[in-house]
Image (cartoon, rainbow, N blue to C red; front, side):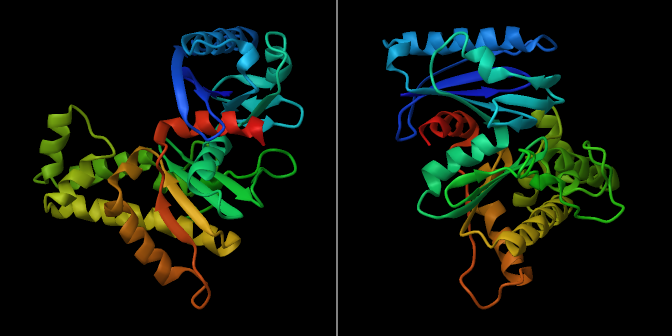
Length: 312
């Protein structure tokens, strides 16, 4: 049994995970930022003991603890080199956690953890695998030869920050024209709002009113209902997503790419146009092509991946 911890800016989520990747118990607690990393680690330790106790086990039954954390992570030395979300700068999370538990403890970037979770459940039959998550930003994780690839300094795999549009829209990272600025759900909401302003008669207004807000589903619901403006938003958004994927495919030629994030729940309605665009525009026309599919773990991917990283 392993413990996987998904350390986020809002909540700390933890799960008890079998070596097959099944989560048997979960719990969470607010992160309560801003505060010192030692206080956060203390809460992670309490949460770990809580889920183990709920399962009728003790910490002696646990073989390792994995932590997925946003930001630049030095897995080798167990340090969060920098995390803007958590306000951490060279925080020795593993050393601090070892004050509570004499166990193997591993830390990795949260997107890498999610990628590894999806890989272990949906891709472990391949040697090259890439996970893309479409959410507040565009996250990514790269698996090569069954190992997470994060560059020589731990900062690799920031796929959301490849440049999609030269001199394009500003991105939260400080650059301009990043894929994230066009293909994240945050970008989709912006694109939806802009289309609604141009189209006062669009069904998107009615849908947003019923939901109480404009969200990532607004344009998709409208498009499925035959709304022209909604369809145009969805078509453009999916082309932004697919255009970035074409670059990733051309660089890595991975055997499999899995797309996650809340918007991936649109399933084939999202996936099929992306496949069509990639088939048309990717460089490889003659050899076996990258398989594209939808994630299955959703919010559990980070917990599963962090936990099973200890096993590896």
